[in-house]
Amino acid sequence: MKNIIVVSGLPVSGKSTLAEGLAKKLNYLLLSVDPIESAIIQSGVKRSFVTGLAAYKIVESVANENLQLNNSVIIDAVSGVPEAKQMWRELAKHHQAKLFIIECSCSDAEVYKERIETRVRNIHDIPEVTWQDVLKRKKESTAWDQPILQIDSLENKAVNIAKALHYISA
Image 1 (cartoon, rainbow, N blue to C red):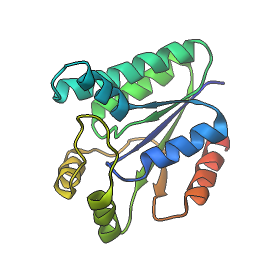
Image 2 (cartoon, rainbow, N blue to C red; image 1 turned 135 degrees about the horizontal axis):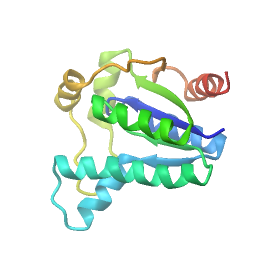
Image 3 (cartoon, helix red, strand yellow; image 1 turned 120 degrees about the vertical axis):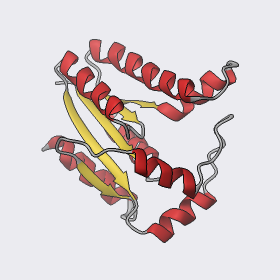
Image 4 (cartoon, one colour; image 1 turned 90 degrees about the horizontal axis):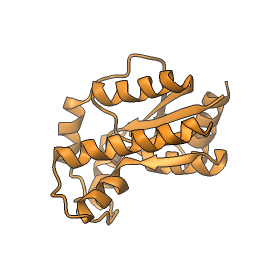
């Protein structure tokens, strides 16, 4: 059976670290929204809501192509708004794929704030997020309305990958 694993959560919550670890363990295609948005910007399109939306649509399209080939995928995206959540549900339904939602967070606000303030990703033309950016995104985000696995990035990376693998295999 094909799987779609959506690794969601606010910026700097540990999504990419977990998604990359799962991709290595499972040998699934990893599709991450941020580098795709950066490529759109590098092509000359001014960064805006549209570039972010386009990145989500590209991830959806590439995931769709791979699912048609019976490949499983991992999606690394905030997926905070209902439209993004629905996009992944519809993709899973269309391909009769099993959808696994993993939501990353950091339970210690001080550690989380420090991670935000010290992170350097160097993604072309996408500025580093600030604590205020994260607080704004948090207000705009909605909860998933289906079973999910909650991952706290304060836990050891290997432990979190093991938890996610257990969730996917159960």
